[in-house]
Length: 168
Image (cartoon, rainbow, N blue to C red; front, side, top):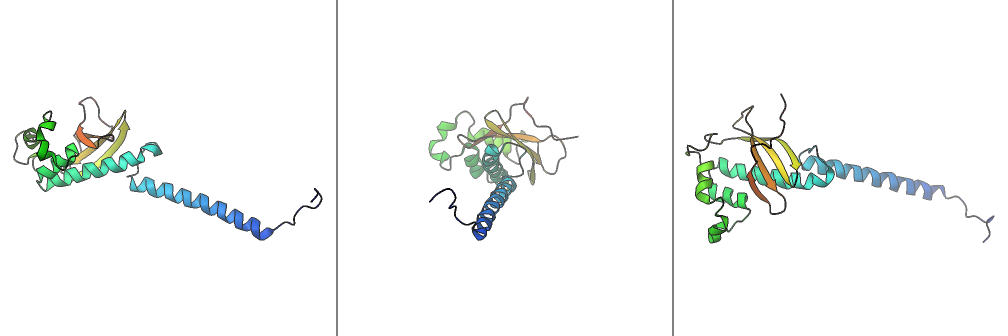
């Protein structure tokens, strides 16, 4: 075959290739948008969206257990260990007794009272953790800020000087 013996132009093949290219690009775009929606519309980089999804799920599960006053399973989510009672000495830094004082509905240390509802209003990856702002019991101010550690999937209180801007 010489240069002058080029194959005939196949219009059907070109149309099929173009349709596959546009279809693949559209499917990729739809998958990215769907993942963004599932992860909670984060205003963060795409490689942090999975952390947002896991962190929001963990904090939602934790607060739902607190709302049901099931503090044992809430503590299991907090320390990310469903068998925490078998080795409670491992969590001596924040033991279950202190956890009960902080989260129990009858505790005087719980400044929110009986926790009935919650709403995650802000989340952002900050340094190596996901910082999440939660409004408890329909409050419009004084959000509770929790951190989710993606490496070990535990929760903690945010340091007092680290808060997210929630708007005016």
